[in-house]
Every structure is written in C-alpha cells, then in structure tokens.
Image (cartoon, rainbow, N blue to C red; front, side, top):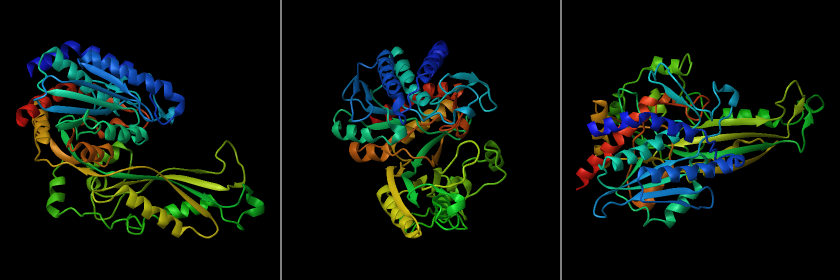
Length: 462
C-alpha cells in the first residue's frame, strides 16, 4: 500500500495532466462530424497503453469505430484480468448550459469535491474512469508489483449502442480469454462510503413517428378539422403511464421478478438522504411508481421515459402551422427477465393499438441491452470489496444501478466471465449533462484501489 501511495503522490500531477489532454479530444461517436477525433482518441489510447507497460497493443478495425486491444502476459499459468472501457463520449449539447467549454477541461473546487473536480465532457463517463486503469497498469509495471496477466479492450461506440463490440467479441473469443472482467463505468454512494454495483438494468430504445396530413397545414384554415400529430403524440405518450405511474404497455410487467421483503430491506440499509437528493437536482418533491422507494424506483423497477420530442415550428417568433409529423425518442429501462426484443415488440403493438385512425404511426427500434446481476459470493466481488475496504477504511456496499451497460450480459454469454463493476463516480457528476465533472479525489482513489483488486483476486484465485 505504501508503494502505491508514494508512486501516486510522485506522479499525480502528470496523471491529472494526461487526463486533461485526453479530454480535449471531442470523441463524440454519435456525430459523424467528429469521426476524425474519435479515431485520434483511439490512437492516443494505444500510445498510452504502450507507455503504461503493455507488451502488445493494436487498433482493431470493426464495422464501426476501432477497438483498442492491449495485453501484458507475464505468466500463462496466472489469472487474467480483462479491462473494458470506452473512449467515446456523449454529445455536449446543449452547449449554452455549460459553465466552461465542454472540451476545454478546467479544474474547479465544489462542495462535494474540495480537492477539485475536472469539468469536461467525458471526465467521468468514461475517459476519467477508463484512464484510471491505464495509470494503475503503469503503477504496477513500474513498481514491479503486477501479480497477474492483463488485457485491455477499449471501444469507441459505447454511447451509441456498442454494435461493433458484439461483432468483435464473437470473432475474438480466444484473444479475449480471461478469468474476470473489470469495468469502471459506474458510480459509488459517496467519497466516504464506497459501493460495488451488482446489478444493471437493461434497455429498449425506440423512436416513434406520428403522421397526420400529407403536408404542414395552416392552423387557422384546418385547425379543429384534422388531427394535429403533435397533440396526438402528446396524448399517446401521456397514456403510457397510469395515475400510479405504472407503465400501461400491454404485458410490460409479465416477466418482472418482484424482490422479496428481505432483499428490499437489505437495499434500504444503504445510506440515502432524500432531502439532499431533492436538493441536488432542485426538486420540491419526488415522483415515481407507487409503492416503491426512490432507490427502488431507480434500480430494481422498470421505467419508460421520453428522451426527446419534436415537431412543427420551434424557431423564433410565431408560425401558425399544424405539422405533418411529430416525433419522440423513448427509452425503457428493464430489469432481469425482461428482454429488449420482447419489450420492444410489446411497445410497438401497444403504440399502434392506441393510435387513432386519424394518424399513421411508425416505431423504429434502436439499440437495446439485457439486465445483469452479479453474485456477491464470487471471488471477483470479494477481491473488489477487500480493495475498497483497504483504501476507504470501510467495506463497500453492494448496490444495484439504474443504468445500463448492455455489453456486460454480452460478455457473460460469449466469454463466460463474470464482470466486476468498480465505479468511482458520484451521482452528482452530471454525466450525459452539461457541466459533467469528475473529482480529483475519485480519480486518484481509483488508481490506488485498482492495483489492490489485482493483488487480492490473484491470491484468491490460486
């Protein structure tokens, strides 16, 4: 532990500056105009992995953006840890809501981050958390404390559904053989109480289109006589949840497993300040499915949310028009036993059923993913917990997350490996939002904790 701490203390300014340089590259995978920047980031990751001590690193072409693969095999009889991360980031929109430019990282002190936090798109999700593993690798190789084999698989399409990752994993199963997969793309309860994510929700994401007349119409000449697609879409969306905020899609809850009273009681042991939660997002009250707590609603219950809605005239001033079309993007977070294909099919049928004859409806499925639960009795979890306990001074709490990482289920299916989710971000880090940030404390604490996971996993695996 002293070796780890002294190395971090000696090199922490460089560690921070290297991350700042990485965050300056706008690797937005969703926008083709950033293609060169995404590829540039992959090349930069290759360079950093080689500098960190990997013996072999390659940029692997895929049908989409490349995957950076690196490895250091010190002894084939020892365990192998496969590290997954992603170098692409979410779009920065709306730019005007950022306090500083999203790709010009700055360090500012905050109430939760008195040591400072890095403000930039990708700071927490996932460049900052991914880069902890690169620096942990450097630490172990430079101090000659690497106890096992390491492989890295860093992709560039996580924020758009990881389609090429599926393609890559299925074609490279031997290359990716491992004993455990390690991911830092989640969070923890607080900087004094670590947690390990043991469950993730799945995802079904669709885009809906409602069409009325064959062209935009004058709202004075036609208003009241024809269907207004925006009005119709709004009513259809409103009907997707009832007065108890339960989802009304036919058969939506058919395969949902209800947790026992004992399991829900265990969840309730995690520290949670409802007033602080509301204050953090400037809400006067909470909202959600009747009969469940806030922490249950955002983790063990399925959801349906409109992520975007548009149609008609949205420019300056007024334009009296009945739009021909209206659109919305809708995501449904799923729990174990719900599958994205099943839920998408049920949504399509339901949405078509509730549409009035005065409009036409089109539903386009986008990406999806399966829910995942990892047992807390496997050695990967135990090694992570021991590592957190040593660096934070208290054991980690197992916690289910409301987010989705669809590739975790893919890894278990194709590589037959369990995944350990060692996240160091906080809920307040504004990932996917303006002013995303990542604490310096969290970044360095991750670099400190990760080598201990390797140490304890190797010892327990023998």
